[in-house]
Image 1: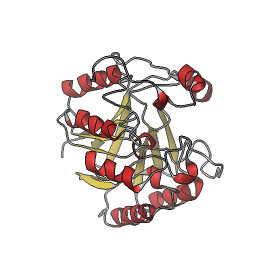
Image 2: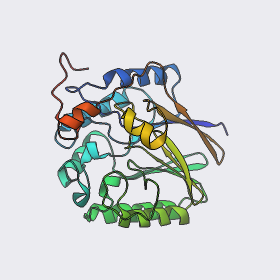
Image 3: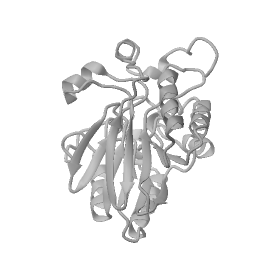
Length: 287
């Protein structure tokens, strides 16, 4: 059994009309074409503003498919919206937004077996939403773990399960809301999850929790240099994570390509409502 090379990319924020981060996506494409992975998972926020610009979802999915590799993706808050009670951008997840994701990208939750491993993707926008789809997803996840036939599991989600303290019950849009988080972590521990791979916060990080590796993928899009240096004592750079699955062993490395550039939008967000989604269209032709 040969080792599997798996790439986890996240937070690309692609758009035909708002191509602010297209240069860094081009850097990622160059890496993938130079050394195609066996499998690719996009960790969410594929789109610049998917909840209100459905064409961003279509465009982003086409760009990923053009890589010519096998792939899956999980939704991010900039793709299908946020859990209604945990919404910062006033873009709650709705049936129409979920349907747009399924039409242009694929299923919201999925399972993929790669040799000794079972990969599972879930939609964190549903966690804590109270929607019927949240219960459907929970049942799916529990069944996927029960039917794994001894395989270790790598779970892909957009939002990290927690920041520092898994018991922190404060209102948040940064991580999985606490009531849903409690269920998620217990289900993972009991069901053979060995790795939780996430994104959303635009910084690479790794930690251990109850026998599981939790690895945050960096973005290919924008970073917050000052915030990351203050909170994580590292210099935020764009990139992606490369996993090697060798039997039941999983190791990863952070890749920060030299042809990706640091794009810090914090001055814009500070002066323009706390989000990049109100940026004007990028001048010139679509990418």
